[in-house]
Length: 297
Ligand code: GDP
Image (cartoon, rainbow, N blue to C red; front, side, top):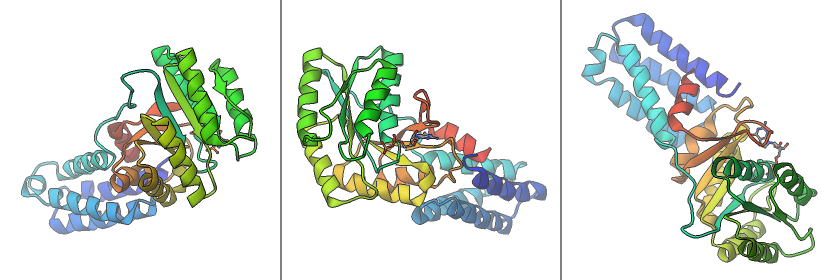
């Protein structure tokens, strides 16, 4: 289950405080030590942990909290508030273009869930807005990525523009956009190539596609199971491409929580959606407060 270890350890820290009745500064210190370890073990970025613990401690040792009748509960609330804050406070909607089409470029490393998420997003737009998206298959390197997107398109009854794997991705995107203009599609979702790790050639290709397509949204898809690595990947893609948002996938697995809690602070970019399963309807808006509830258990 996602966040299991983190939830358990945070609850242990709170239970220690709750048993006390009256809470002293040194009790807060002990609890904060446990919370710090819990976050580090959940693979949260070190600087994020440091800042988080500092803020919670400062708020928790305030006399109003320690002198209150329910200090432990108040500290739980402070932790909740700060968890929400590091995840970005409120949900951030998709950027939209004032004229059609809104262009969404999906980027990420291989295996993160990019192609699946392109399909999930198309389905979401069709279901919620009766949108008429066109998906463009521009991942020509991963074997079967084009076929995978075509199959997803057939399942959803959403058109997919593809030119096989022998053309330059920038050319594919150019022709795909021309088709979208002709067919008056209101959204274009571009599935781009990934690699096993960030490399120069990949970034150059993505920059070229970005320059041509002028996307309203560059969504980075990252695998939440990879923890700190997901955070580093987000930092790398953001530096190169100035992404506009993140989709965190595989939250249905036993992810520890590090990516969800670090990415916003490290990149300054919002997590917009979370993937919670392999099926095409398993995409949800990322709500920081609900995620904090889930983490606290
Ligand atoms: P890409 O290489 O980034 O395009 O990755 P794919 O879209 O092919 O996804 C890689 C694998 O992850 C596939 O088996 C997907 O079904 C799976 N996957 C993607 N998103 C999720 C998710 O949110 N939860 C789970 N459990 N699996 C996912």
